[in-house]
Amino acid sequence: MQPASIFIVEDEAIVSKDLSGTLESLGYSVAGTAKNSETAMEKITETKPDLVLMDIHIAGNTDGIETAGKIHTLLNIPVVYLTAHADEQVLERAKVTEPYGYIIKPFEERGLQSTIEMALYKFHADERIRDNEALVRSLVNLNPEPVFIIDKDTRILYINNAFTEPKIPSESFPAPRTLESLASSGMISPALLTAVRAHFNDNTPYKFEEEFGGKWLSHTISPLTNQNNQISRCAIESYDITDTKKRELDLTSLTKQLENEKQSLLLFTAMLDSMDDFVIATDPIGKIIYINKIFQQRFGYTPEEVHEKHISFIKDPGDPFVMDTNAFFADRKTVWSGNVTFVTRFGIRIKTLLKSTPVELDRFNQYRVFVLRERLG
Image (cartoon, rainbow, N blue to C red; front, side, top):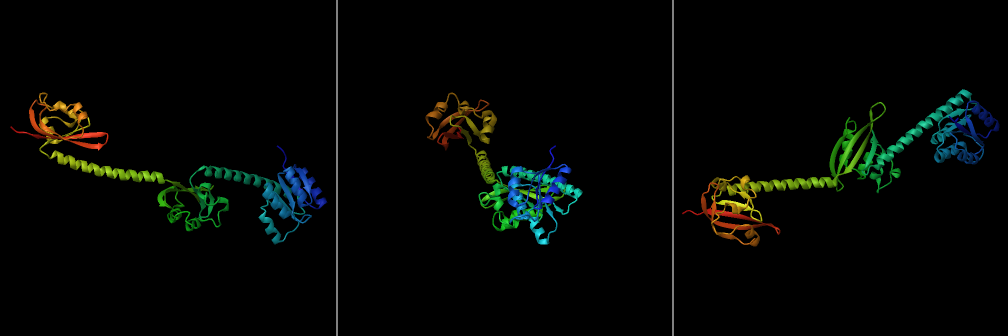
């Protein structure tokens, strides 16, 4: 395993040399030294050390704090400050650069090593966290639907690209980023804000649908737990279900329409069953699709027995009235009428006065309804 490389930025030559020797005796490698900011940035960029020891007060116009800020921003290398003394104002400036520790001069070997090791450990831990966050961010951004994560105070911790585009990129989203600010700007509905407040601490995801901004949206509010298994955040996913909802509404409307048609059909069937005349309906070529109750009683057939049988099978073979398949093809549009004799299942002949009316469902399908009135005598 390669020893950690340390770069020293110190304008006092004796201190720099002493520090280099101490680091090497502790098993570290010294990547280089510099006395001022310009030289430090050049060498650090070139050598890419694992850690930089930075004196706060160095030679030149740019001090150690400003230099550390550049290293943090441009190179992402951890910095530990060296200082003999610092007032509160200097320390406040130093905090902004997010250092990984402070070493007070004159330093002790044990304190130097422990500070470096802790800094390296924390930096690598932070790197893993950043990598994990980047991975999660990439995975969340794969979701084409809006997703955002909030804390208990409804502060927005992360918004994926699907939510912010094309309105505003997530990195330039105005502060403070809260659900209230999204609701007040019209980016989310008051109903979603209310639901998040009410169900933030639910142990299971809460789902609901709403119509907002001309769309139907399905929201899922999912709890996120910390390492102590306590709910500290929640994720809100929103899906555009406008098309699905439209199909549902269309299906509901169609179902209602079919139900109304069914009721009308039942009423019409009841009316036909109450008639004293025989009623038969056929398809375009003369196959039976319906018989009323009085026909069933007098002719002795059930609807299943005559279904899709040609109507001519119940006509007396000796009757001259033409009603075979060719007749249905040849004369589709006129009303048929005449005296026709039919034969029941039991061989009984029934003389009827027939009237057949064409029923056009569409330009391709011409059905017929036959009304047969029994002739007595």
